[in-house]
Amino acid sequence: MADIYGFLKIKRKLAGNRTIGDRIRDHSEVEQVLNSEDRMLQAARCMDCGVPYCHWGCPVDNLIPEWNDLLYKGDWKGAYTRLNSTNNFPEFTGRICPAPCEHACVLNINQEPVTIRENEAAIVEKAFSEGYIKPSIPKTRSGKNVAVIGSGPAGMAAADLLNQAGHLVTLFEKDDKAGGLLRYGIPDFKLSKSVIDRRIDLMIKEGLILKTGVAVGNDISARELVDQFDAVCIAIGAGHPRDIAVEGRELSGIHHAMEFLTLQNRVNSGILHPDDNHITAEGKKVLVIGGGDTGSDCVGTSIRQKPVSVMQIEILPKPPVTRAQDNPWPYYGKILKTSTSHEEGCERAWGISTLRFLGENNRVTGIEAEDVIWSNGNGRYTMQPVEGTRRKIEADLVLLALGFVHPVIEGLLSELDLELNIRKNIKVNEGNLTNREKIFAAGDSVSGASLVVNAIASGRRVAADIDRFLKKN
Image (tube, rainbow, N blue to C red):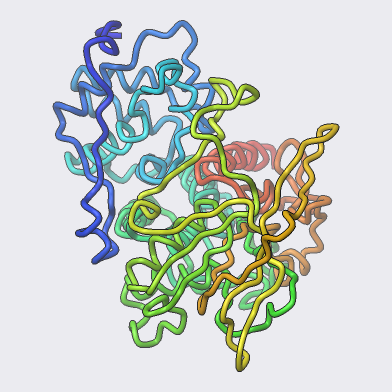
């Protein structure tokens, strides 16, 4: 490292966010950027660790100390080259990754980790703006054809590496634009869709064939498609949402989070006219059930639609502000997270169970809820209601942000008769091959719902497996 004492001289400095009053008026990205000089100084805080736990904590095995050192020295091009060697899309992870690397950073022992995620975003944006990133067209082609079904982060990563390996890759997407949940599930204020378009355009210039608006298994026979390609990669994500099976679920005004978020993203892109958005928080009391990142996205999107109020509830207990004794460094800190959306104005509550939905004239008016407490006995957590806490929480728009349970089975998976595991995810062997010849799978459709960075890592692994398969056959 150029300055092994940099962490002693330079304090952690975040780029910060746009002011709340400014950002809630639009859907533009919230996070700001540091100037190049300050960013290079932040990279100087990366010290000469004997064991770089940041690297251990990163699902794509980013060479974090190496590109931080290059960044500190002002070698932005070299930093990008080193970053891109392990991560196809640092412009995505640099914006929306929860940064397990920072949780594992040695400096996080004192709660002042290196700004790894922001450094990553700065490097790739500099590389684009300076023209370091140019189409890399394979010099030779293998003559093998690969179909990748699903253009989320796993599918994009697999398609990118297989194309660079010289295979002819066709990427199929059921929606009108590529990106999967990156495009229609993550709000623009976290990830501008121009960032996805920029990368997709680059991949097309490099030889990728993109076919959007094609739902394999419905619009085109899955078996027919398999017959046309030398290998097939299924990366359709975990699209089946978790639900609440309680009285009143059929009432109007109760929606899954992705229905709500997708419509707003379509409005932002110009695909859907605002008047045709039939799920809006404007003038309503919004209740978000589910305390995770998707719930937070629902909060931020609702606030931009000018609701009367927004409340987010979670059935699990409130996380601690600092690490518990059984959650030590360098593991990911299971601590309270307050997002930019929460900062914008939202009531939050934990340990609340939804007993039933209430309504009038077939329209939801709220929920009946009660407090619950959790206890751990013999390694199993159990939930007990708190007597005397039953009450009504008013709401005329309820958004269910409860995660996803498994991929959509009807259509593609059922037609191919793919074997599933106990959780109804696609079952694969160590080489990511399914029970069907030449059909591979990756991403959330195999693991269940997970992080974007995990999906990219999975896509990279399956690309290597498919490449080996094609070279043998």
